[in-house]
Length: 522
Image 1: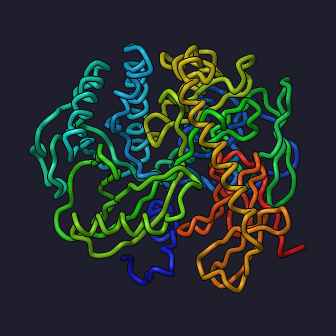
Image 2 (image 1 turned 60 degrees about the vertical axis):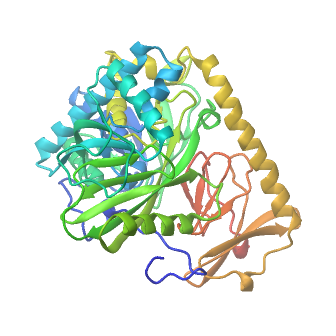
């Protein structure tokens, strides 16, 4: 059990290791403050993660006038919270791709990720960032897992890669103290500090003339082109950007008139950073059997351990999942202390390929990037390169495969229908559960907890965080899902499409366009 925890006191997350002010080393330029007034640009990029900033740099270097809008801070989204493995050793991703796509598509996916990996190395070298070269190591602990690794090795080889499949841990350790049935190794991959990488990209962007505005949320997109208008809100007031092209790189797309939310499955991934004694395992590890376990080195004596992911808003035991993750780390690693605990969100597509390209099938003045399924370091970088190339009229080799309106929409249909059947089930059960209970008693809500009940016919959520009781309307403003309390992150999470809100009701992420109504301030 985590230090200081009791069964009645949930584990609480904090900033990711990479974003902790005590450990963060800024690479150079600072972003501009919030946007106010009306400005113009050739391209406006929404989202200052690895995809958005990579695209912005490439566009500015090609002579385009670029503005980047970030609702929170640079790295506040998926990139800054990831385990940051820049690798093509992606679990069973290549065999999964092979189940949906012909060999040429899978080979071009490998080509795209290799290009992204090269670009990450180039940025790191140019900025003088310390990097951790490491093998990507996927391991199995069961006979079924071994069979899956055998299939993955064949799929990776067919895609032009050179994986090595062995019965035990390969030479060149030390490795994890875990008995294995098979190990799949891909040499010469990279573990990075994602925030340092974003800071280096920000520095490149600013030097190339990009205007990067933080604390500026894009709230409105005009329906027609010539030019597009993006309305914004910040602590300083409203703003407006007029641009010929819009790049949406916000995780799940904002302004989702194209229904991406119905083709994306949101999932949260958990991470803890642990300080360990002695030699640390040398590779970047991922288990193929469940529960998933991910391990990589970080800094002088830390390891980042990840796993126990879950569909957003569909579990009640997030804090317990952190406890379980730390227990596994203490069992298999010589842990001195847990230094950080955090989570991040990403989205998966029905056919395992990202959605990168046209926001609408009938126009290309609004572009989108999403659906990296937790492998967005190399693939997200490649996506930024592809978006910039598309704007510049020089599409890259893999761009057509990743287009959101590619020719396999029919093949995506069964998975999409299954995904939306789950959404419908959670919509019905959420409302039924909320309406069967009476109003929550604020005095009965323990510290760190949130409870959903009803006020008349309206689901309401009452939470107590740091002694402060808050009451919100517990209905997601996106499509009406009843929210569930995330006891580790002190947030209200939607089980339909992954929108998340603070205890105060402020929007954190997801397709919801606004926050929750505060009912205790009426």
